Length: 383
Image (tube, rainbow, N blue to C red; front, side):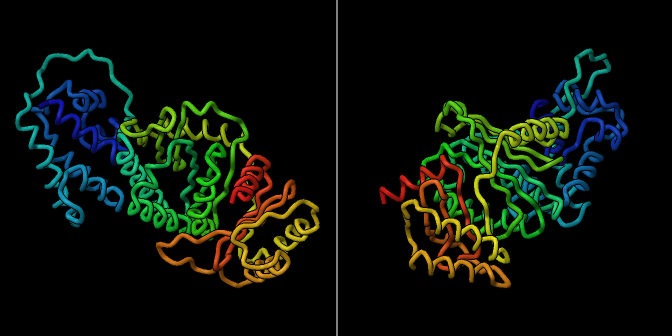
């Protein structure tokens, strides 16, 4: 039973970002003592109160919505059942910890010569369902940061964790839009190794988010072997998610939610080195950038390459005027809720490709990266 109690304590500490030294200061214990209790190597202290002060400490820490949601799941008390008052929350936490503590042996007076483990710990989630739980915690923490949220996102893993659950996909989109509208910023490295149909579906799905602004899209030109695939999502200074899979197999694979600041900083450095190898994947023209778009579009028209289109409702010349007019509007059009826009494409060899949503083009993507451009041209020729 000692293992169960220590795991509960460890999960609470991980959830709230509490290190051994932080809890030790709050409860007036030695840091190494907390570390041993947390690992199940020491029982509940006999000479000094522990469980009730710990419950009060964690109740004061669990105030943000993302923490409350995670705590409700951890304690299995039901969504929306977290007490609004700190005293009531402390009582709930104390009772949850005491369920197992009552059966624990009290600590002995003998010395403990075990080596202390690092204070910062992680949480583990498994398979696609586990990744979704970790991502929701990640996004809720980003929402709590408001305008200061800085996210870097990269994944070349199978995206079924995102697309196979429509309700989760809707929640993902809503939370990402809230982060961006609050002033948060996102750098994302897209994988060009994906099938072009999957890439165009991703562009279509992300268009409502790009309309919010504050997204910088990149790609890495270096070719990977396609065997080892990785996800690394980072909320600067706060949290990260990492996972590794083989090929397209993700079910049952491990996902690590990291809150330890030292490890988050290490991943930020790693991600910085990765983005230094990346290049912008496209130029985005938004509302208010009509003149810059028109200059690019006129260059496109002058190019002698063969024109390929899909979904364009007008001739190419009138299309340019329509897009310029749309980008001259004072406010971008609001996408229909829960509805992905359709997309249209106009492309020429060497010149590039314009991709834009219909029926309300509030932004236009211009793609000149040759690998992606050639994939788009092949797609247009097939269709």
